[in-house]
Length: 226
Length: 245
Image 1: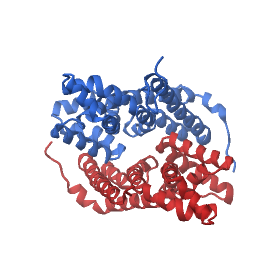
Image 2 (image 1 turned 60 degrees about the horizontal axis):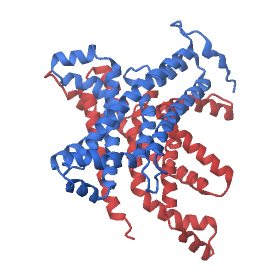
Image 3 (image 1 turned 90 degrees about the vertical axis):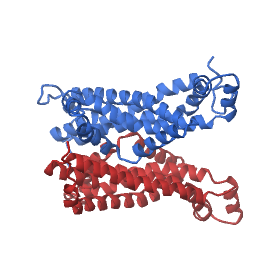
């Protein structure tokens, strides 16, 4: 087996780069959306209003118990039905677009657990201090608790984002062309699995390894010495 | 919306003479087989790697660390494709051919998912061992134990009991992760889910049923390990129970 030909990678680099760009776009959108939605869920879960608590914990437990591939496929099929229900006309949204929605909703459950432990890690006195200053509950959360929670949890949030970046490869299930999907499609055409899959694995490794080392550094730098 | 609910389709016959609910049951069987097999591989290898990373030997630590870095930074689906389509090409010709043609897919999938999960287990085992007071090892050495004996009789029995909750959640995750093996041809639950949707379009019913099954599997695993956790809790620790009596 000496006939490896990495020419297939260079010949198709543009298609691969397109795929990687899509992977990054989904990652960034789902990260931002997921953290916002996740923070809301965490606040609901910690609030004193029972229905909100129940809703948030049901949401989080649900999405943490189902396989992501299944959610990707189910949302891809069910989302157009729901949209049709509201708008009254067929709404094909396509595999590539449905992934943005799926990943945001799915990752929110994981980000929410991180934010929840972040909020719980803030000293109780901080809330009392907020109230003593005359802040409303909303102000205390927005100005006092959440910034600290966010800072404490930043490394964990970023680590989760690296996981998310890897998980985007599962859009394979609905045939969207992410980085791995692009490589797979080229393989189907040119029959060069060894070169293509190895390239994908190496690129994923380099990106994720570098990012996780950076997160480690960041963690050491922002740690608050108490 | 004019979705046509039809719960009875599960009892209809599919093209291969089986009924759809039988497809689901067979998928569930494969899911359980892949998951439990991979869990066994992961626990074994993960423990070895976790221990290696806490030894005084620089070389062993480096091997363990590298393993964890590699297997945590490549997506599972890519790892599985590597095991199925790339690694056999690098083996000696005869062995590669045997792997491709004779070795059951199930074995390759179990190894792939197992090695992926082992990296996560190794992290837990390592942190469990590191959570112990250093004095535990010294006490063992002072009693004349060899390094290995301090692991066998002193440190591992404690470490496992400390990290059992974390291992529980990995064990629950493995059912979810096993769904990815559909991509390399394992006819497990998610594969059947996908196939039944293609054949019948009864998306909602089948989604509800398959989701419930994944829930059930994870819950069953949780109960089994909670039982073990309760029986093995270390008396005297904050998390410890009242002892195993």
